[in-house]
Image 1: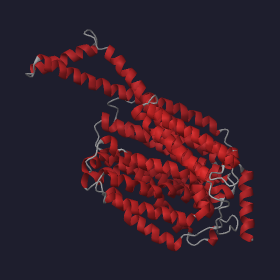
Image 2: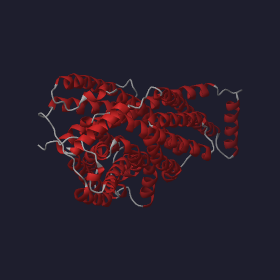
Image 3: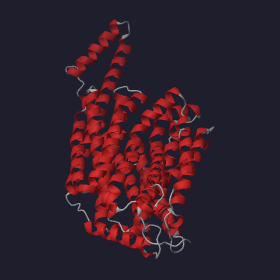
Image 4: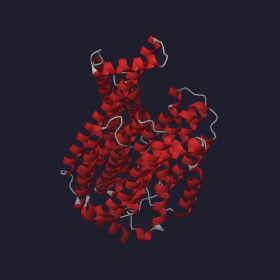
Length: 527
């Protein structure tokens, strides 16, 4: 076991901190990008691997479950094996997994290879954040995390465009092969240039904490993932959510009694950190609602191809890439509260704009609203996250980043499940109401009759013309109902972000904690 020499993030003692940031960003960008590129390629993979649609979804679900299981324990793993070793292990595993996914020959092989890939992908982001917070002192973290945030915000938006292009003009296998050369370069640079901080893991392996954490978070996330397909009342969903909640309750009890727990619940004693988690949850839900609903709207209602949808969303990613470093630099000067308020106000206003979409809303209007939402999220996300982490004691840095990433993942999954269910329910209500309004004397009924007469005039028989007209009317009703349900979901999201604005006023800058942390660092460096 290597002994800890105390908290050290004096960057003058670290070889090439800029290069280390580049290595960390490369790894995290690849891992986050991979979560969005695969969705676009699923139809092609389904055909190529001769799989059913319900089984091919395990290519996505398996990856998501491994992330949910490993991210919470990444803090303990970092303390046990050290940031450099664990990050290089994650990079290597992810790169090997990507190469294997590219050569997969059937469904079973690609699911196994995706799980291997996910082991690396799950660890990269929390470990990278831990290393950043150990490299840079609190007064410089805003700017650095702003640059790091480009990977977190831009990757999910760039993913669909990149994946759509590769799938349409090359092959779905290239979405995995693309990671290999980048991963190899990052591994070589990391092995040669990355700095290893002293680390120490006390006590024996907390097997109960490990078991209940892995099972609890895995079942919870799988349950949320199945809600859009099966609904909250499904016995399958209820079983997994119940097991997940019970395991997490037992986890808390166990970790409070164990001398050296797998998950340090002490991190939740910090008011500033807890407020940060709540606000980040709000921002994450808002961000993923747009990422989830907008592609469905563009492709199913507007008829956009996957490539066009990706390109349509790319300007918002570019806006995030521009805003994120600026907000980080401003955070170092003015703190998180003003940026959090301004960012969430922008998100709220833009989200309200999405509550009035129609089946023929101008594409320019939609794009500008999405750009505005992305800019607002970018303005608020990193300052709120960084301020919360700045208040965490140095010895709990790795545990703080693990919980930060876990809460964001659970919040995004829960938010997507709740709002998808709400959208589906509202869409069904709207569809039923519109169907009831189709009467012989109503405007929609007259339109239906007119369509039937036009089809008969084209040579179609009476019964076939009537059936075709009814099919067209039903398709029109379903489109209108989908858009109406989506609008209602965006309204709920706007209320949530408005509540987030109010919460930011209770978010104080813990100067005492940051100054104490900085003083502790300087003393360690002198020693």
